[in-house]
Image 1 (cartoon, rainbow, N blue to C red):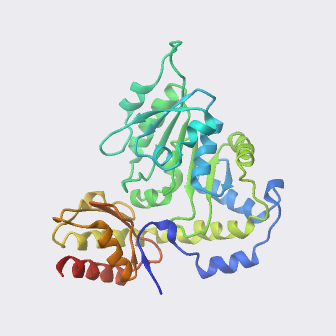
Image 2: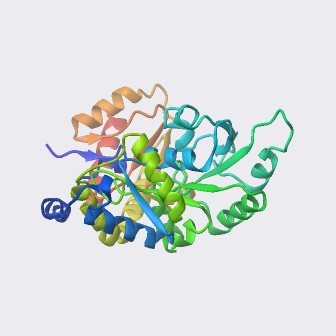
Image 3: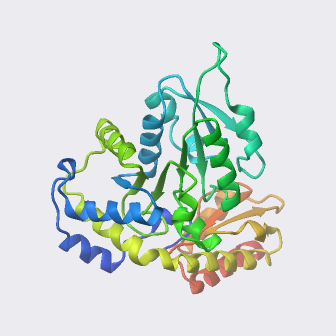
Length: 341
């Protein structure tokens, strides 16, 4: 049975071209640095985000944590958003792996502003930890995008105080698509950046951590420490090359489908989406129906061949390469059927 899967863009299946590339990939031992396909992927990734070098890692979480490990020292404090992936979805890894604490910025829009950073930078008082890193996200986990002007302002204040900046750009290319700029125009306002190729870019596995040559050299050792040293990883990197060369330019289709889904959800009584916040491929829908049973709703959609996560009163739907406009029409019909029966 074919499912329409709106839980995330991590559920995308590799394309037939990717499967063929995996089969034909030229490989070597990446720990020795002699996998030519991995090397090509890393070179391409670095070029696209305007950095000197890149490192292929199994996951975005590993990429973010390696960046924190390289940038900071034991006992440092990092400035990070309250609802960021690093805080909410990485198992508290920064505390365990890097021995750092969080200075959390909690704004209603999930953004970090210049004033937030200045207020949280520690002085030289003997009682204070050292502010070791500013961690940003773009796109944000709430589906909105940070502007270039906002990124530049944050980077400038961090440099003024000698603080490195890491960008969790899991959906960096979605953000760039929304802003109609190249990814490197966003990444220029960070010393290191992680982006994912297994979300909207459809690879089965992997993320890229990018930065200076010196940074990536240190990052390679941290990857090995975490057990992320891969051997004939070219079979995966081959998909990543296709992601960067061919899948970036189709992200606009996902964004348009998200807007289409949001507009149609708004026409259902009790369903509400803030269309101004549908900026990438994520739709957050608030359901205000008396006695609404979210578990029952999820189970009903699953019986129809539609997969969604139980969000209680706020559901997140994520469009992706494997969901088309016809699928969205079917989803809307099923939701109407459930609501009006």
